[in-house]
Length: 149
Image (cartoon, rainbow, N blue to C red; front, side, top):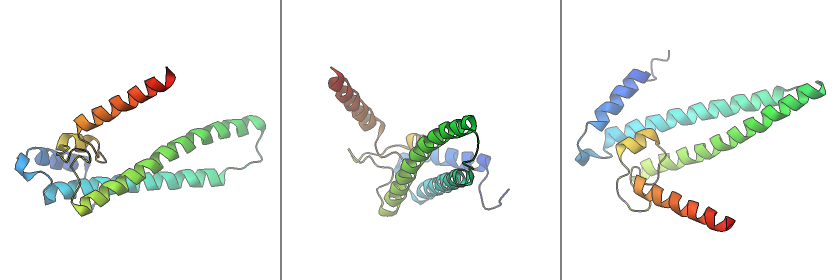
């Protein structure tokens, strides 16, 4: 185990310590450091996985029989969908890291209100507080429903 990486139990203890802080400490230096570390770790994990997927795709031999080729193409299709999702997540992580740097992290882009530590613990890339996210999802649902009527 890398001694510079915090263990899962240390990460959990750190998260619990942050959650116990008073509301007046919201987005203090320690909280920002926690989320920066979490986002950087997640970015590194995704980048490593994307590199691994590229290597597998590049090493595939095209001279195999038709059933092997069909199986590979199905696996490739699924892998590309996952890579697309992970690439979008990388963009969200970069955006969150920029918000940390410019002092906007942890605050709703729509209302300016705090997003809240529990929500950020669950989704560190969150840009909206739960109320604004629910409104957004209701509007999207209404729009989709209206398109099909």
